[in-house]
Image 1 (tube, rainbow, N blue to C red):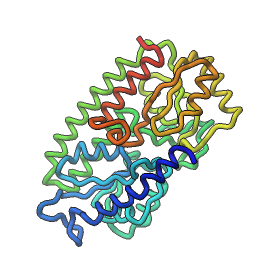
Image 2: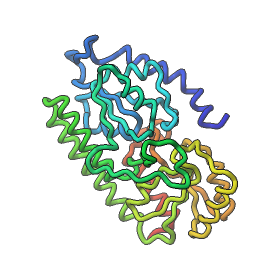
Image 3: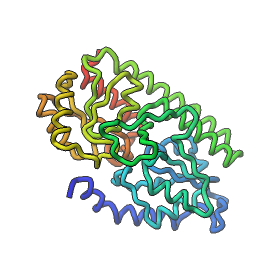
Image 4: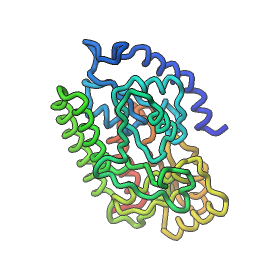
Length: 317
């Protein structure tokens, strides 16, 4: 059993219990209407980056529940009865489509009534990249790469869509949503400026990553992603492919191979040893960083740290 599977088994009971308690302590009345002392809207979000955006914009006016349990690999999410109930009892569900989490899309397609479902990959300004031709073995809808959240400018586009949907659902709170949206757009813009300043004048422009999650980041900041595994981390390379990745990394002058906090690092270590490189952390932000890094960590702080690590690993000016 690998480390991800072991971690899942350890947290499964805790997560199931916590979701059940959350469902039992719903902030809405039995008919779905908000109670007098509850937020106006009950919102579900498919996993951390979307949940973070929704919370930042919604503030105290909404209640937000994430659909991906602690420690669960988002690509492999299988909804249970309790998370399906969360979907059914929500006013709005924000998610990423294109086959990123097929079970979420299936549950939304099968609902007889209930929430407004908003696929943020269809938000104005979000342009999807193709999955890598050599690693895109997963049957994603349209063979597209869903990892849009690793480009702060695409997070801005999704933030605008979230604010618009929330404002339509709760017009009396639209002023708060718009204020929060503007503050968030400014923070994401500042992050983009920071990353633009950090990742420039590099000795190499190739980042070797654990899985093919970083193409949007690479495209935004003038880099080339060389991924060890596919769009899903479960798509493992065969020995010949691994040897080719190592050869390509060496030819590109790579001196740092990146691994992710919740994925086994053995493949990254193998490539690094083959070419005499070091390894370093690069977060794909598929998990809540407060749970896996520490209190006070968020999308903004982790992306800033990613920029510093990339700048060091690529020996940027």
